[in-house]
Image (cartoon, rainbow, N blue to C red; front, side, top):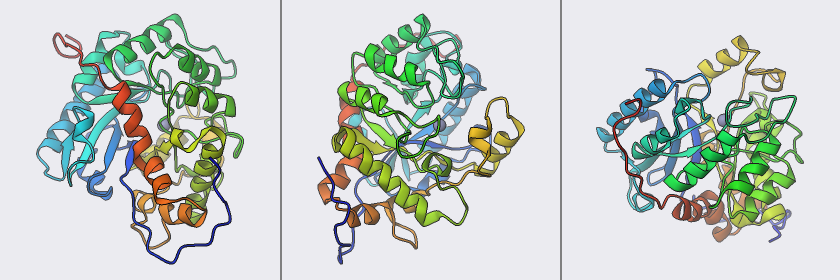
Length: 348
Ligand SMILES: [Zn+2]
């Protein structure tokens, strides 16, 4: 479909659609507070990161168990078991994701163990090559390994999203080729609009869409091309431009939201500065990272939010509903079907 870029701004109030947030981050430590997620609107679905390359299986499993217990004890949240748990009540539906295969500890049976505890999405690699494949910051793009292909097969079998964000370009393409059910990019913007190694090529986007998947657009300043602290409105507009570009490139039914909002901004920015081997100047040259906030994502703040900006650019209510929630919901309905049988706990 084509979206008119010059439609007049509507006079009526823009109603925020159901939100499916495919990726955000709490601190990966005892500092994580599930209550922070209450900044998302009632009824939303939120996927929370519980680990990437530095975390062991035990680290991620311990954090996951604690966050689950905290969510169960707080009536504002409910844990996602099936797709039916999402969008049907006032509470916020919570699932989890892993940003690297490292926390599996090399044991593919851990995919099912994490699934049992609510993990519904996993990236084979985070920025740099590992046993599964290549990362987006690597100088040489090595693609999926034999272990990576076996991992994709297991993710498909168990019913967890295979997620190409942070992977190398070749790894992302091979993931789309290998997957028997739709793969996703949980939080990736377009390199054609902003040339950054974390952003995906048009070829990757087309391959994801051809496999039936969805690309979640993020609100990270350095991946949007406007990261200054005073560029709050510009970031929302840039996010809208990536959504619009994706809709024109691969069809609006393949675009979603994965804002990558970091509730641990200070810790993460400190980690970036202290660890140049893991985060090159591609991450640090623009200063501390800034994000589009949960409030600005739904238009709950004191500036025009993303829905209002999109409506001003010609998006209709049905377009907003598709991008903000229904596209990821449709793909999850296909991918999350399987019910694994788990023997023993993680590491047992
Ligand atoms: Zn990420």
